[in-house]
Length: 334
Image: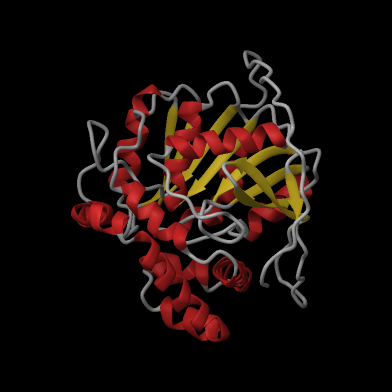
């Protein structure tokens, strides 16, 4: 199995459950993807795709607790360019699905569920489209909608930056380096910065972020992610948001449930409704009065929706790949 264990740096008296295990998986071409696991190793696996920004530990406290109490295995999977994941820009979201397929093969995950927050939403939908024999079901919490082609949603923040997509792509390395350097410089005062940033969030999101455990999770995740590979993933995400996705939502065969707040200033409720209308086997849950991060408080609902589709008897056993030799490496940085 092509995994490399990494040294843990435990927090003092944490409010949230810490990862059971953290490691990297080799996905080919000299690239690695970082993963944090919560819950027992023998549990049914659900891959959690973080928002923008985010890293492998952006799994909400209630989801971590649910995993421990219900024998569920949640894997927080980092995208390229944050935490322990090697920087890389896909041509489209389909490239991510190929990496997830490699991860699933190496970890011997025959079937799995998917949950994506915000910028992680398109990555869930790409895997649901590309890996229908392995994805049991998906859940999208305030997910970004397509901006191009016949699946495109009208309005929204991402459409405002679409004209800059080419410029951002050409400057993604210096932009990523600048963003990473800025966040690293602010890490020593991360708590003060977090308090200052709270004022910019709508009331629904402030209710989520003012919870001590949720605050600890976000700060811990952002500090670790930026201290390691940096935040190049944020720039890559925005580039992909402005491009064609490489597939149509209309062609997704697996069940996908959408959760959307009606007070979301970043991804309007209409975008969740739009995507749900396009995915054939989908549902849409309105979260009244909640903003962009409200879906985090409903993580248990999303998990239970996925588990309700388990097992799917028509699924085939995936072809096993020959394992590559594992080479131990040291973690760089802290």
